[in-house]
Length: 341
Ligand code: F6P
Image 1: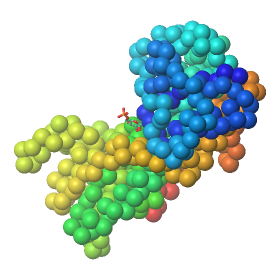
Image 2 (image 1 turned 180 degrees about the vertical axis):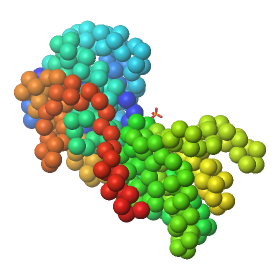
Image 3 (image 1 turned 180 degrees about the horizontal axis):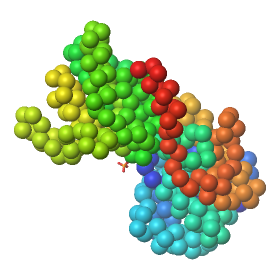
Image 4 (image 1 turned 120 degrees about the vertical axis):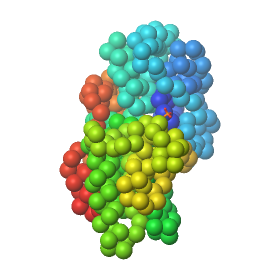
């Protein structure tokens, strides 16, 4: 079998573990030929392709990023790109294409599959917001990084009697904020799924300070937003010293809390540090299993599917199910988190 593999969208710890696993399972177990497209669908469209053999994937299991490189597909040019990819998949003589990516990549994969291409998707994102799978690899690493940051911020917050607002990734779903907030024992968690009222956070901090717990940590997802009309500081607002310094929600919320409480508040934007570096053992294992099962799905002719973790097993779910909607944090998970604030 001739298998093409590519990594697309934002990078994610564990991508190399999938590539390695696809090559091992394909080449060593089935005698397949595996080729890698560089920089996502761009490599497929522009002919940047290279063979992948066992030697090429030696030593990459614990390596962050992706040896193939990645790029994002422009939404506006999705149909055009998919049509080009469809023609080239045939031209390359591929028996299977394994795109590894998030919602955008899997949407393109589904469109290719609908056009009759032999596609098996592998879900990846640190945001854990892909439907149909209990987990995506990369998420555990991101939560581990964010949790360590919260642990560290607590000690400096306490020393200086400050409020720390930690902004983590999660544009549309708050899984990283939820789980790192819980694991780190944050005193407030804000997610995109539920608009927050800064007054609740002010009440929480005031109550803690009244108990001589003179610090607090709030974990906020980058996509979280205040309920309509509850927050004074908008994007690019001017602070009490006349400085324009607020852009993301972490900065805005820290400024809002500081001005309402009269207590020092500091924003900490974790950003891409959550996505870089070595994957955790959990992510390496999940990624390896996904790679193994993607090759098996290709050999079984189970195209139009995506590998998915369901309970403890790896299953094949239709790509259509995976991209139907994003997996968001349900209210009961927030209630559980709040019960230990
Ligand atoms: O991979 C998803 C994600 O991590 C989001 O949480 C975040 O908004 C986005 O990537 C940012 O990625 P980039 O800076 O590469 O566009």
